[in-house]
Image (tube, rainbow, N blue to C red; front, side):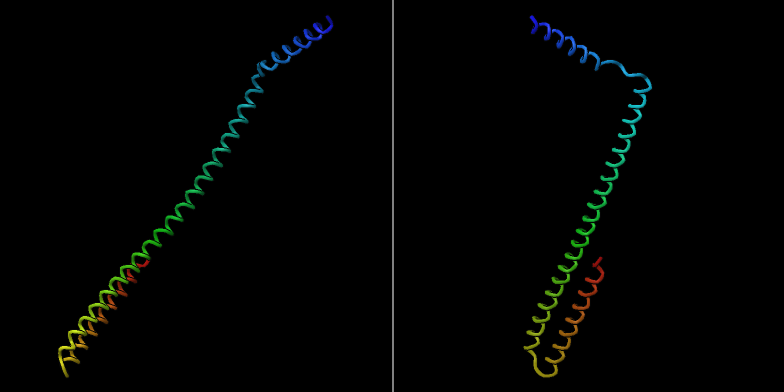
Length: 132
């Protein structure tokens, strides 16, 4: 019987504790809690926006660097192609000059060299104009 009494007292005490937790707060306390939560929310949103802006700026910088790398690579590739073409044309022209003799051969080689120098200068100018 004593166990039942102790159990009943514990049950009544437990019900009283649980029912006390659902009591309404005063309007002033609620207003303070709401204002505090709103301030915390505003600070968290501001921090999240700041972090997002920083991450976007970092990503944008990486994209800019990659774009510069791509432009530099494309310019170097175009230069290499132009130089390969100029070298090949020069070698072919010199071989054609071998069919000539004397002054005609010398004039042919001079002309081939002049075209080669012009092609190299054009390739270098193209490279310089395409670099960022």
